[in-house]
Length: 307
Image (cartoon, rainbow, N blue to C red; front, side, top):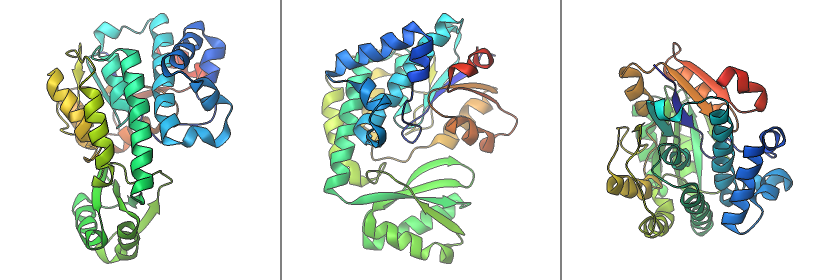
């Protein structure tokens, strides 16, 4: 069976991401130049030469998408058969790259949506002081109970169910303060506050979801050419109108990544490729199923391995 293609989300960004690909391959350089023209500013400079700017939500999101698209275009030149891909999925922001890969979205539409999404999420985080807390080794039941306890002081939700023992809560700062204070009482041995611009995948992001829903109405979405798995439902989705609604809903909904991967694994998919900055998804998938084969294409030196 051919490899499923998985695309990373925010958190995978790094200063200079994509530069090594652009230096080595013309199609990658052209992809960044195309992104600059589509957005009307130099995303290339923001990603490669602006230090901490790359960590801003409104830069990181289009930057990660563009880097992943550039890498995929190089891999296609090197023999990756896009038409033979059985499955694709992306973690949060990565869904837009997955939908581009599956033929649902044009690159320009995906890029502009992601830029708007990043701006809207940045603004929502500034309007509602909020953050995210990773729970080390927690079960889903513990995470849900802790989120419920935190909700007595503000918005507090389960935001990401990534892998066994890797669950993230999200919400208003006061609520996340309570979550950290109450963690041990709920059997959670350790927490880690994430460096993010806001409480993503919670109701703190409702204004961003509303803005994104309006923008999505203006974009053509086509049926996927391969199986596309949604973060919101952890199910294969192929109806363009339903995908449109789920993309807006995703901003405030938990990311069901573990269940999404188990769906593919249960169908017999055992080989996966992660084109994008970093190797985050490879690490997560090995926690879900140590027998799965996961290959990353984060740098040009990975090219021989990944194709």
